[in-house]
Length: 516
Image (cartoon, rainbow, N blue to C red):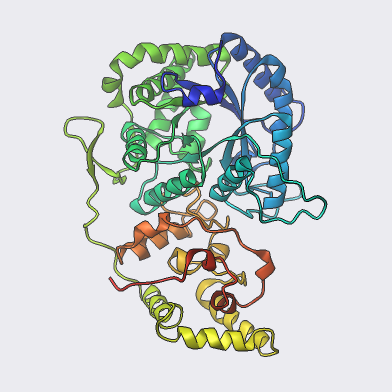
């Protein structure tokens, strides 16, 4: 009898396999018919532990995946449902989770989601109220029955605990140290928030696959890792190589191989499947806990070939591993290379190498922080007395306006009233990040650039890492899980809220900045 997705992932003797198929737009389409046909064959085979259903891939509108769950359930096919923070605030996400629990859906892949690209009458307003770390944290608390921060005006009854098996995504396929380390810090937060499994992003480099596995083990995160094995074709490879699919890394060289293969009708299908089978064999050899197979139009018979072929190739996986080194030049690796091997050594990168120069704006911010915002030092006592004195008085409003005029110029301030500048090296996630990411970089950055503004704007976590690394403080990016923005504080003085202990900092203690 086929094990459930959760049972397979948690069983060290089982290699869990899921298949992801993008649903697409519309409620009745050939694409949806093909998904159901695929799932019916997969259910009969017993080789697939779950069908993975996407949620608005690429930032485009799609059929809500829960609808297909109703079609798949009678087949006996388990489902891994994607749930993104895109287009939903925290209340809607909570309500949707109660609905999923009521229906009996258990497996959730929690993600931030892609920035919206298009919609009815143009691009819609982006909504990213919380991020993937906070969504995982919310689900974990719901599983424990611990959502106690909302007053139930209707009933005083306790909310029953849910029973979700929740996971997140992580990428080791980033080019620069700044963006790669930001991904690892966010991975640490996801596991601390309660992630029960992790699925990798799309990439085609053996060392990077092994790197993520080693990082998880060496960091004692104790979480199952599932490798993303996408079966490429010429069209998808070309799109990914041009960074048209956020977070996926396909080099121009790899895309060219698929283009060359496509010139031969007899060769192309075999080439696409053999390439995927080789990668699947490698991740089996690397002792991943499973594979997340991405499908781009392949039939179940073809996916079945990939699965069975990978078992044959696994005997020579270390030889095959050398074929998969599709990364841009000068790509950063957390571990140093192993001599005469396509794998990594146990030695991490040289953290004592030359650090970035200290930026003047950040130096000034740090100086002002030490002067006024460190408890028991400098002007902290005076500032606390001042804001306590003017609290609720007429003068508080002009002081607040002055504060936000200054911070709008220096930090693109959005008047949150709950400032997170200190937590992200004095860079504002509300004004500088299109997705308002509080707990780390989203997976959509490429070559250090923001997903939404490629070649125009660096990811704020790329910049924050540089600022902190110049002071040997980069690891602080993985320490705190920041609370979501409290809209009760919108438009109020963040300085007053800080000194009067009304903001998120109250939960973590007064901020400290040391000289290094």
